[in-house]
Image (cartoon, rainbow, N blue to C red; front, top):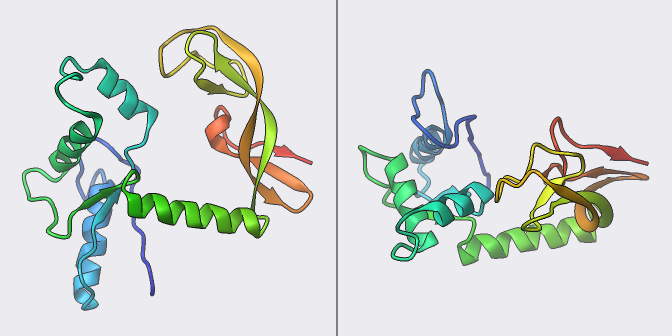
Length: 180
């Protein structure tokens, strides 16, 4: 099976093919290419397991009436407005099939040595315990607290022979740090 993946710099907000190509535009292009190749339509995959989604749901006035999954479904459908959601459906990274595939890929990368789990220095929010990175950050993106504390946590790292590149999910900008 051949896979073509399109993505754009704009994940949320207004999209346009000419000026602000985003994920919605990219997956519509992939869908059109599949049609040209005579391939069946496939569900559109969106990542929704994010801190921003957690905060958005927690801060919503209707959080007790509207569940997180329902809120994400509404937000995804709105990305396609005024057009319809694709007939092939929508998937999120929380869908069982996607979780299973991700776990399979992670296990394979751990088994072949591409990824490793190593303890590294991180900073945690002193109030809620959310990981804020490896340096003094602007504060916690989960609760807004500005006080962090040092800690050591197991992190997934990309293994490159005798060096490791720490995952950017545990590091502040500008990117990965090499440890040899």
